[in-house]
Image 1 (cartoon, helix red, strand yellow):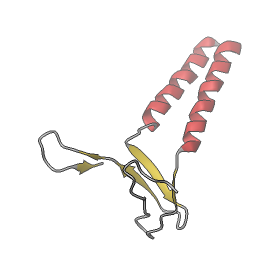
Image 2 (cartoon, rainbow, N blue to C red):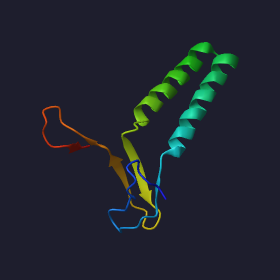
Image 3 (spheres, rainbow, N blue to C red):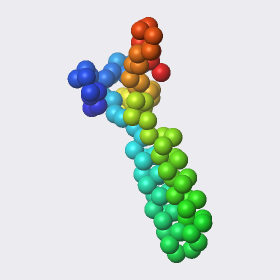
Length: 98
């Protein structure tokens, strides 16, 4: 079961189940494999193509790895949603959730 930082249990917005889990680990594994494959190509085949693979892997990680936006999936009904941390507006206005 996934518990957010504030100590409050997560619930599925569709069915209300607390049996939820964070997802996105497959993307992290794919990005790591892309980086290792780029290093292999850079060492054994051609440096330019290897560097291109490494740059693509780093850009992929920077695009996907956003700690403020966590994808969560319900293990009961299969519904998935993004948990976004509330961000306060700079003008003292109401909090915004993206």
